[in-house]
Length: 479
Ligand code: SF4
Image (cartoon, rainbow, N blue to C red; front, side, top):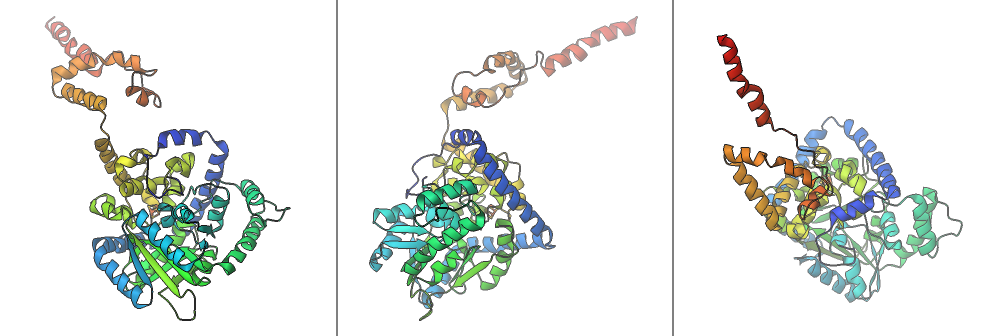
């Protein structure tokens, strides 16, 4: 799904995309360098926490409590936020959310809005939807700005431009950012300074901002954004109107629960003890900050995921991207290969549940099932187990008659000793498939080496060595 679309259209062709990106050595170098650095920082900071496993268990338990009583917590949040002057809107899907946000912006008469980094607004394709109404949304997160100026798509949840190195970013700035200094170098400080100057003007001019949120507190109606640059805080404080699009799974029951997540999130996401900026806001404060605060609570497939006993744990996700940073498949294929808002292991389990497994049937297979993602997940999502379950669902949703016939024949052959012995006699025929074979078998052998079947089966060997030997031995004994 491209960032500009509002609805899911096709089953992402992960194998073809991955094959292409694996051939891009520069891309692989960029991703490996970045993920290795984040992985090391995370490991160092986690090892200094003696109660890390207890924190993970607490994070998982808090999120499970929310999911179990989501209806109650949502109503509590709505009441608390409304009581503090925010207007709460409910959106069943991407189209409804986009319509609500577009209409709210149109009511202000503005044609330009600033936007803080938000995966939820990426998920619904908000930028494209606003553009259809003649409204330009300017990304203010540095990495999102790079992606936007490069007419590109994010490829990582926390570091959306992870696939670009600084030389490529310099080129984008010089080409697309009108006020970039002509002698701009690729020094990270120089690049950050150029974007700071570019964005500062936008911050002071903007009347409307759009944000997401990392957490929503049911008890107080507060929202929280954790970030590194401070750009989201500018969005949250300077404009007159603030519209926050929040997935319904972002709730935590009480303010105190943030204590757990504000330890888990920065260590898992950017490898920091705490995020440089944690911004909390609750409704409207007269004379201070936005005077119009809207919160759009988004479902968009989340209640479908909630129905699934095994799959619902994906809704615990706090979007830290630790699972992406350790995933051998993500490191080699890159985020664009998933062709979805959420790449990597979390994307492989979340996307099929949000859009329906029949529309993302390849993604659950985009994993080696090594289990490293489960090990690092701060809210203990058992990603491998959900992947296996979704693979099962995917096969059931997209049954192939030839595959069905093959497995029926295998089942039949294995159901009796004589039949199985007879089937083994056909094993040498497998040699014919070593270099391909008719579809759909060629799709399997095209990407895997089929081992040469042995000249003799174990059963035949056993009969030769033991059963046929016995009469000779007995005969020898009589002599
Ligand atoms: S699944 Fe776990 S590790 Fe992956 S992004 Fe979500 S919270 Fe982080």
